[in-house]
Image (cartoon, rainbow, N blue to C red; front, top):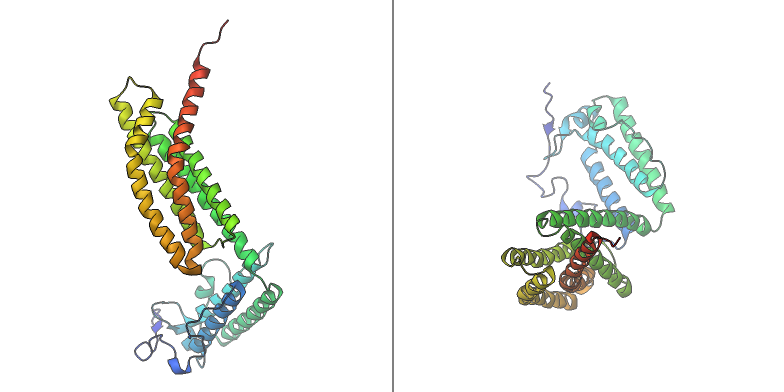
Length: 325
């Protein structure tokens, strides 16, 4: 007998490979549930029904040999794997020490799936037990918003901190021949932009979700882009006018890039105002984040990043002056 699983599906008959759409018990009306708990319950219900439809009426040999394209994993392995998934859901919901895996680490659920009646019965029993335990845990957590919010908050802080540090280091390295303080100016400007945007979201009482996080990271990139434009012009002017002081060079560079900055930001802000007004409640938090972030990112590149560099350079010169005896 070959070790390659038998490819088995009804894809030539029904688009989703498994059921006549008219007899499909899964939710397919296109209406998404509202809220984290309702979404998770709907997901669990649909994938449990899908698994039942795949495995119903198959003997141990077929369960161990058949797979569903495009996967090459056996249905019996999938059955055992989804028992692990049920346990993973509980580990995610319930704080504290996670429960150990049922079948071992890695792909043990698939590797240990062989055509034996006792093993098949044990797999079904494990799955039923894990599903009951998951339902019991969900009943004790009617609101998963706090759990989702905790994960999102942790991921958001990590993403923003990493992006800010690496961008500051990149700018400091790129403009090291003028002054290492450009990196400090960029980081302080970014921190300012983030605090203003987050504060505006809190004041407006808008939802902070994954799209809002993506918008916040976009704001960081936009602000850094503006800062690099100004800093690059400062570097060019510093190489051309070596006898002038840094304040004069910086003032000239900002004036030279001001029209470009206003035009670019103005066009983006007009589009975001339209998106905020006409995009509806789903797009409103991300559009609001981008709008506030683009405005703050524009002026922070001029009025925060530059002055920080000047302040830094003056402090360095003052410390370098010889003290009177």
